Structure formats: structure tokens, C-alpha cells
Length: 408
Image 1 (cartoon, rainbow, N blue to C red):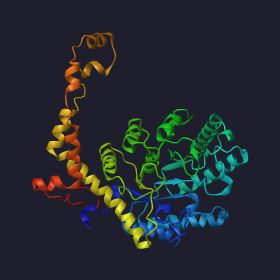
Image 2: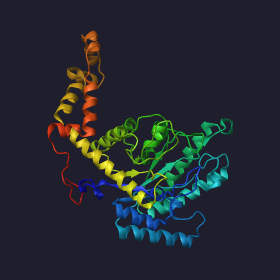
Image 3: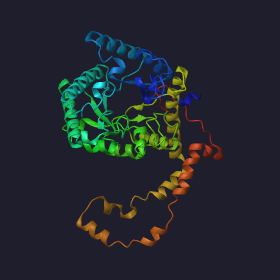
Image 4: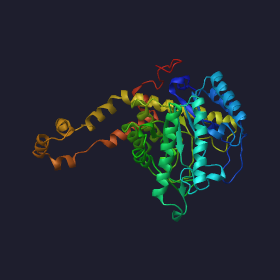
């Protein structure tokens, strides 16, 4: 493989223990790979060049572990990460596997279940803080219904709100510098999950007591399951200052949650997402929440992890090429008129600007008949992604060399 596409710490690539640790079990078949312990998985991630490792509480500490065992496990894991040069940028709580959560955690009808969910999450937040995590993700995998008569959704959302408010206050009281990120998903494992899209989450956040602490963690597969455009979702989150974390994988719309390797199903969509992340100033982790195909052994898992990061870096290089492509940039300059001479009038309302806009003589018929060159633009982008533009122009497709700190 081309060394110019090898990951560096500055790329901030992270994987969850549950991703490289996925044994390939599915609803129709048993595991095909061995279950590795957390420290072995950290070693694997260090071997492939990852920067960070993320975890659910029970990925690391068994749900019924005594306090003494919990402290030893966390201490040994923290030391292994230090020894191998990995950080823990994000942590989360498993509120979906144990049978107690069969009808939800924060939104359960049973107050005892909701209390246990809070207890479990506070203990998990403690683990995340001990490991140095700065982001804490909430995915409501069981927060939903199959029987709509069983829950008033207004009550369920209020319960969810109460729990997030409570946990924000807990972090403040403990002095933790954590931010929360809500992760949306429309369905699976529940028939319908509350807060099914990132847009729902953004609206919900505005109702929270400590809304400044809470953002979103959009996931490619989850947005695609809802038939939405991940590029647009992330752009809205960035515009609102709420993109705290992002999950990179891939998904064919309309299917079950596939968690494919990033860019493996929709490379063009992945390109626009990478371009947005790199050009928007987003400084958070690039987290791969996916897993290797069930056909693979552990060598295939390594190929999966390396391929995830390599694809991102290739698309990052393509974004640079797009910025430097004179034909594409010329097209964009003609297409994006940004209001032209009338832009100042539209920036802010005043009686004077309203009068002037009302007096404008606009060629409606001419504007409606004019071509916008989108076909040409789209083909240029396709050819750039296919590598044709480099060959036709005699340019080298080899990207600039990357130093050890990841800078060019």
C-alpha cells in the first residue's frame, strides 16, 4: 500500500472495541471469529495505526463485576493505552443488551428500570472520565416501541429529557469536562426508536436544561437507513455548533443496519462527507463504527481497519485535488453567485432594504430558462474520483508526502 495513505495521530482516527472486536455473529449464525479481550484489541488497533479507542462500559468491565475487579480492569486498560500510544476520546453506556432494558432504559414504563439506567450510566461516566474521554455518546437502542398503545411518546420524551438533564448535572457536580452527544437511529432493534434522526435530536437538545453541553453524533448508516443525506445532516449539525462526534461507516439505504466499512457502498457520498469534515474546521474524532464482513478472519479484521482509514485519507486527498482543479473551481464560481449585487440587501431586514428589493427588476423568464451546468460539474467530480482527470492532464495522482505528525 502507498505509504502516503498511512494514518497519523493527527488524523484522529478511532475505533470502538465493539467494532474490531465484532465476532461476526448475526441473527442467523454464530460467531466466526474469536472473542478477544480489550487489551488484545488495543494492541490490534495500535498495530494498524489508529489514534483512539472507544468503548461501552461492558466492552471493558463485565456488567456484574465487583468494584475491586472493576478498578483493576480499568487501571490495566488505561496503562495498556498509554503504553501503546492510544487515547480514549469517547465512551458510552450499553443500555440495550441486558434483559432489564427489553422495553427501554430512560424511557421504560418501570421507574425501577429508569433508576437502574441512571445508576449504570453514572458508573459508566466515571469510567469514561477515568480514561480521559471528552465525549460521552447516548444511543437509545431500546428507547422505542413496537406497540404504540404501550407508551405515550410525549411521556417517553419527557422521561428521556429528565435523564439527560440529570446526567448533565451529575457531570457538573463531579467536575467532569465531558460533553454529551446524542446518536439517532430510526429502527432496529426496536420497531420504532425515539429521536429517530439527527434532526429530531437537534430539536430535542434545545429543550434541555444544559443544552450547551449536548450535541449530536450522526452515523452514516443510521441516516441512510432513514433515507436521508448524511452530508446534509452533518452540515446542519456543524452550522448549529452541535457536531461533537461522528460515526463513519456505510449502508445501502432501505436495508437493516449493515455497518459496512466506510466508503464501501457509497464512495461518492463518503467523499462529500470527508470534504465537509476537512473543510469545515471540525476537530473531533473520525470514528469508525463498523465491522468486518462475516466472511473474514482476524487478518481480515486488520484489513477492514486499515481500509477504513485508507479510504478516508484517499478521499481527503481527492478533496484537495478538487480545491486545486481549475475547471471545477471555475464552474463553482459561476454557479455560486451568492446573491450577486443584491446580496447586501438580503443580509438583514430594514424598511429601506425591503423597499429596494420590492423595486428590483428581475428577469424571471431568463433566469428560469438558463442552464446551471450541474451536469458538467457532476461529471467533473465523477472523473476526479475515478482518477481520469489526473491521467488526462498528465498530472501525478501521487499525493504530497506526509510527515510523522500528519502535516504536508
